[in-house]
Image 1: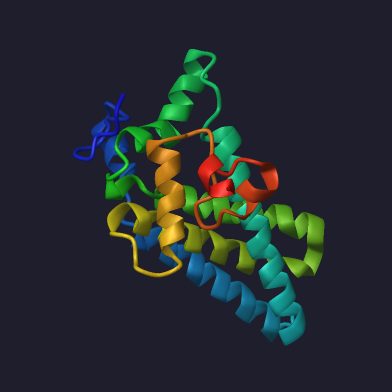
Image 2: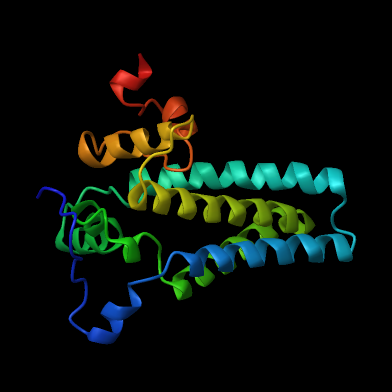
Length: 203
C-alpha cells in the first residue's frame, strides 16, 4: 500500500477505544517533561544528585533512550508479521503510521500508555541503578519527549534550511524509500553504529 497523506486508519471498531488512539502531541511531551523535571528536583532536594552527577546521569539516560528508540523501532515496530497476532500488533502500533504518515494525531502513543511507559522505566532503572534513577530517568524521559517532538515536526512541517534538515531527509528515506533502514528518528547515531544507514548517506 502506498502512503496515504489524507485520512486515518481505523484500528478499533469500538468508538471509545478508537478515540483513545488519537493524541495531541503536546500532551505526552508535557507529561514526560514534567516528570523529568520532577525527578531532578526530587533528586536535588533529597541529596541524591549534585550538579556534576545530574549532568552526567542526564546525558547517560538520554543516550540510553536513543538506543531504546532505535531497537524498539527496528525490532518491535518492524517485526516480521509471521502470524495474525504479530500482524495485528505491528499494524496497531506502527504499520498504520506507515500507511498514513501525515496523521498528526497518531504520532504519539495515548497518554495512559505514556504514563505506563514512564512508570515502567522508572521502576526498572530504580531496581538496577538505585538512587541514580533520578538523573538517568530524567534524561531518558527528556530523550523520549525530544523524540516525540522531532517525529511530529518531520511529519507536520517543512524541513528547515539548516543542519536539522538532515533529520527530515533521514526519516523520509525510512518512510518513502527504504523502511528497512534509517530507524533512528531523533538521531541517526545508532543507524551509523548498527549499519542501517541508507546507502547514499553512508557515502
